[in-house]
Length: 242
Image 1 (cartoon, one colour):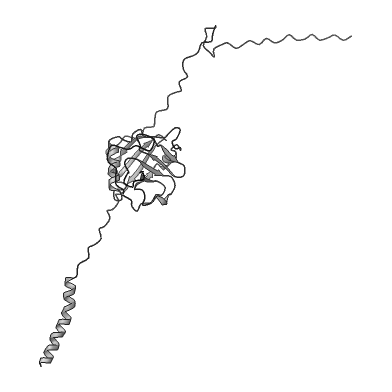
Image 2 (spheres, one colour; image 1 turned 135 degrees about the vertical axis):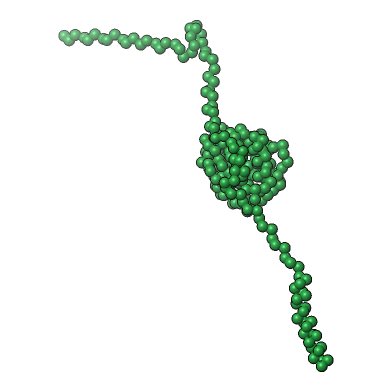
């Protein structure tokens, strides 16, 4: 009887052991879920650029992928920082870069640089990404819009938005490093701020030709002299035949 009782006790220990182990095992922590992107109709995340090339460009901002850079863009836009700035470096088949108050690629805002937020968004056509120097944490105010895919830039530069309307006005930006007649951001807005309708850039002033020059001895401005009168030569008399 003692032997049988011992067997029952041993079996009870064996059956209880897995239960005890299961009860003390650590519970895995669920992976954090990525924030959802804002809807494309969310005006707080629509960046509007009125370009001198003839129209308004709408850019869908992605705070789910680059929250700090999106915050910087909104702050500078509401300070009217981008109004009037030129696209100073524009490479055909690659991208158009702007957002530099100096106009040569070396400038930025007075705010601190933004740390890198390299993410999963690709550098495809219409992508809007933060320009930076060699230091990966040197993004500030400058940005570039991609003409054609450059996937080799992925996870090396911070994509923070994408053009969803008006890409034809981006395509029309004057090329050059720097361009001879650079295209400009006339105004930048956040759509939720109820911006006015697009206003075209005023036409350039006519060229200044200077004051008229008076021809010496005539008292008349240059270009006002009367044309010379051409007097036809008298016709030759026909010789009589003999």
